[in-house]
Image (cartoon, rainbow, N blue to C red):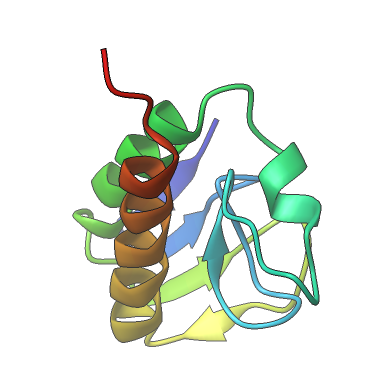
Length: 94
């Protein structure tokens, strides 16, 4: 669940992102902070959710784990790109 306050552009994104070691989307693996990889049962769905949340163009990103980030769009772009890159890398050919 996430909530966008349209009055000031604040996005409360729950566990869709974390900001403890930079902005990461749920389902993303980072060696020094692997926990976001455990926040999702489906990496591709988590990446798509992160993209949709980024598309809301928030002015502020508040998450369940980490500090609130002002002007988060560039960091969210990088997080979404990394999430989809990891999905493609881990995809099994059929």
